[in-house]
Image 1 (tube, rainbow over the protein chains, first blue to last red):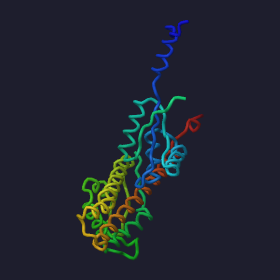
Image 2 (cartoon, chains in turn brown, red):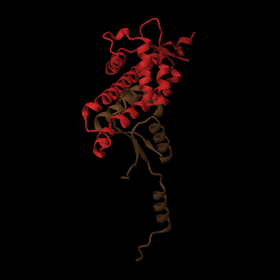
Image 3 (cartoon, rainbow over the protein chains, first blue to last red):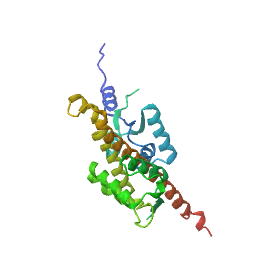
Image 4 (cartoon, each protein chain N blue to C red):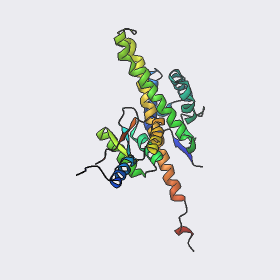
Length: 98
Length: 160
């Protein structure tokens, strides 16, 4: 009995592989930037409200880092550029598939 | 356009006075700081970063005849000012504070703490002063924004 995948199965596999990956934008804690400043930058870059931005800033402060946004790579890179321009320590991380 | 204007923030004023103390221009009463003190401090900051000092200068509108001072700037300028302050703080940390252990290691500076102490204290004072100023400006911005939002007419205000 043949074990080769049918054309339909192959197509499904290709479709799954082509699914665009998601990326986390992560802000790292640093000893220079003030808490108020980090909150302000998060608000301005992502458009979050004061409470949400302050919550994320506290995560950065207490855990050393926080995921502040997740989505397409191109947009994640644009956000990263804005955060770096504001002197925040940050990086991108690809979200692993389940 | 929202105009941001506040009395020179108390916390920053205390830090400013600490700076001046470290620079041996100490005034016992922080409220009695004078225009000349301010100019002196700004000249000291110039030593560290000529690009940022213009932005910090922009914050301070001293009146020769009265104690310092008010911070007055357009809210639109705040991004540039905060960016300048942040750059200057990073510059102080990177070039004046963190470099010192490395300089010790490679022997390019004399291993005499007394020689280094004034520079470290001065840098750290300026660092704290700028931090306090930055924090207070953001709080003032939030307050100004909140007042502005309260004054904005809502849809229900326009209902007959």
